Image (tube, rainbow, N blue to C red):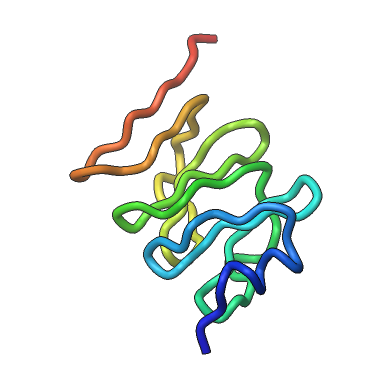
Length: 100
């Protein structure tokens, strides 16, 4: 059974759009994802921030750095973290790393 945004608003303080079968949600100061059935996935609300899925990836913030996860919740580019991360489009994502 598919869930709608109205149902999610009862539980979460902020919700994003459903893209590629997932929607990011926020409760208190934590972010995570729910599937179209409204179930939390990828370990629950474990991120500092999160963005919508695009082309199979979503940007998530952990330890004040952006990373990308895949549709299984796995870190996609294991040795990469970014100061700024944008959604993928046509196979590319605009990212930025600040110099140390």
